[in-house]
Length: 474
Image (cartoon, rainbow, N blue to C red; front, top):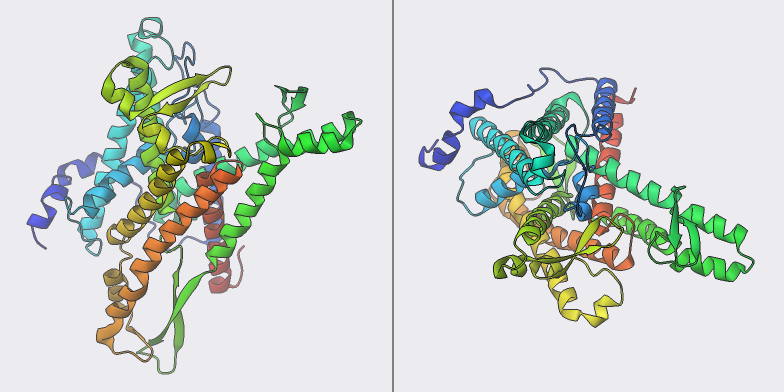
């Protein structure tokens, strides 16, 4: 082990004892128990999403996380105010450092991996504290004079400890006690909840033609029953603006199907077990080799830029650099702001289909940003997650597995032919599908739908694998 390669990570050793940790399961937990623990974890998250923060005078001003709340699994004014933002942001920062070789880490070494995970958790807690402080300082919960110093400290502590809880719940599932990860579970739940609410919400809103129901399907039946002109009622239900419509719902279903279709694209390498003669199998390399990681990291990058851009613009809107970062306009009666200029505007999706034509520069920059960041994060992720061609070749050699028709020495070369291409091109495809969903007006945003589908598909594969291994699920 080279000391120079671990100099930065070695600084984590004294802090490791202070960082909260869930120990890995000593034996394999039965699938039935893992399902129960996963359900309990989800229940705790949903309860925390409804518990209001103590000490809030009022939720004033626009919501800086409005555009990303669904993706970040957060709920305004509750313990889940920050959601998974600190965890995902810390992962993004350390990944970029490792990708740029500023932080050397060898995921094959147990100590390296433990120190890297500890650094990620510590950074997540620091980010949670900083975001909580920024929320309180910006007056999101009322003026500091109204809240008082005691309540301000309590608000910061509540948000920080809620992030610790999310961190431990996520780690508990990943350490073998549950299925998947807490981050994926919370994201999928939040997105599916949003889509169902937009489709079946019984709440009434004030539309262009009077009082309407918010839910697209409820509004469809209401309009068909109450309007004498059924053609006009269908047009209103399919194309109404300012509220979810049937076209948005159909676009969402279409994107779901397209993503599921792309999930089946893979290259299968024929491998053989050198210990057991005649035993052959396949090693699949999926098109979405890094799954939803690129879009999660890209969302973390954008959400943090939106967050700090809005806070700075609110306080220093006359500053040139702040205006360059982003200029925001509050939407009346909506409780959120939209970017109208600056970097934040150009990396946000066009709000209307007509805007694609009227502002082509915005559209081009947005497309280039999404495709570029997804490809970059995808390719970088394989190097720091232990899934690079070198790591996979080592895993196969440790299992005494080799490629059929190839020498052992050519294993890594063959993997290098496919894995980097699958990572980069797969990341670009994920970005392209996100853009398509945004342009079609799918409910929950293109990013949200991509995340939901890939997460749900991952759970489906986990259930299928468990059934194949044990023969039964429960």
